[in-house]
Image 1: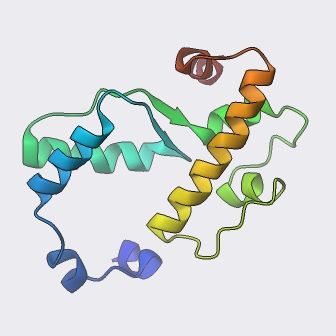
Image 2: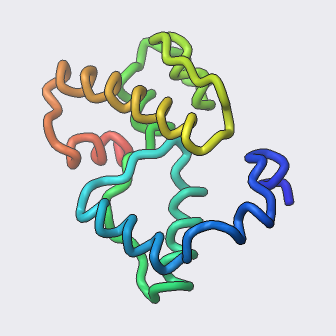
Length: 137
C-alpha cells in the first residue's frame, strides 16, 4: 500500500501491465550480462530477484553498482552524511522533476552514473570490478 501511495501506480494499473514472464524475459534479454546500477540497490535487488524467482525460477547474477555506496567513495570531498539520491544529483545540476517516479528516478540515476564514471576514469578506474572494489573498501 505504501508503494502505491509513493509511486502512484494503483492495483488496476499494475494488473493492466505486460505479462510478468514476458516482461522479465524481455528485461533479461536486454540486460544480458551488463551490470545494474541503482541508488540503495537492496530494494531493487530484492524486488527483481523475487519476481525472477517467482515467475522464472532464477535469480539475476549481474554485477550491481550501488551508487549510494560507490559515489561517496569517489567524491570524498563531500560530507559523508549524504545519503539520498537528491544529495548527489543536485550539486552537478541533475534535475529530477518527478521524484519517486520510476522513469524519472532511473534517468537521474543514469545521469549520476555518468558523472560518477567520469570521476572514476579520472582516478584510473576503467572496469566495473574497480567500482565494485570501492564498495568492499
